[in-house]
Image (cartoon, helix red, strand yellow):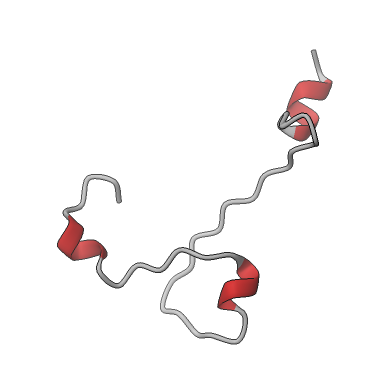
Length: 48
């Protein structure tokens, strides 16, 4: 998607799950991660 030109991204919406609640979209891309207050990526930093 990063290599697309700006015209092909006109209809792309970026939001939170709360922001899209109640809407229908043709496609959804979800990115899920876990972080703590120290901004460490959860379980990845637990295994030093």
